[in-house]
Length: 171
Image 1 (cartoon, rainbow, N blue to C red):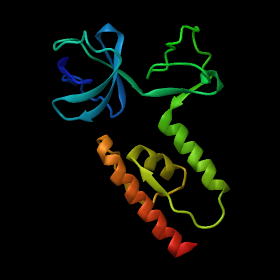
Image 2 (cartoon, rainbow, N blue to C red):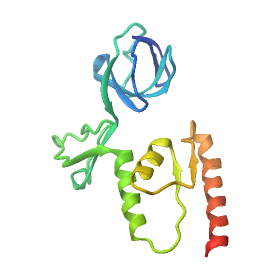
Image 3 (tube, helix red, strand yellow):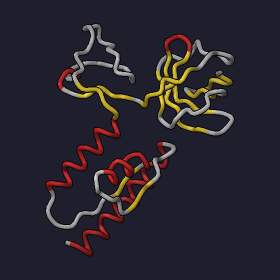
Image 4 (cartoon, rainbow, N blue to C red):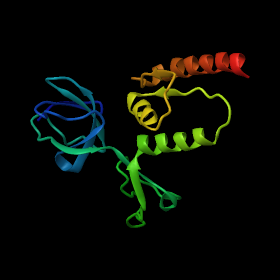
């Protein structure tokens, strides 16, 4: 059940077992992404016009994480965060739809296979680190996903500092 809605975030109670990044279905065909999972309440980033959502509204688990459409069918198209077309040009012939993190980890794994010499892997977020580790590419440093826009600049600075240090030692 929705307990509060404010500034694009809904607080929800009564959804046991919901996972981080899981899509949550709300009234008015609104979806959100579970991001702050506490034992008593879940923070959900709302995707879409949430102006009609109110405390007391029903929330449901979907059992799936956020998917993103990928491929040539998206070139020149306008879509919402859930991949639904907004441009009036009909449905997408999406081809592939996949978890962004899975797509990214697969790309990085492929690129690492093509590199020669010593490489250093820095991962942002536990999900990416886990996927890379499963593929045999252990990250040397795990950075937390920034909790705000203001936290991105220090994160990038820390990553650049580590890369420069690596270059001095190995190149």
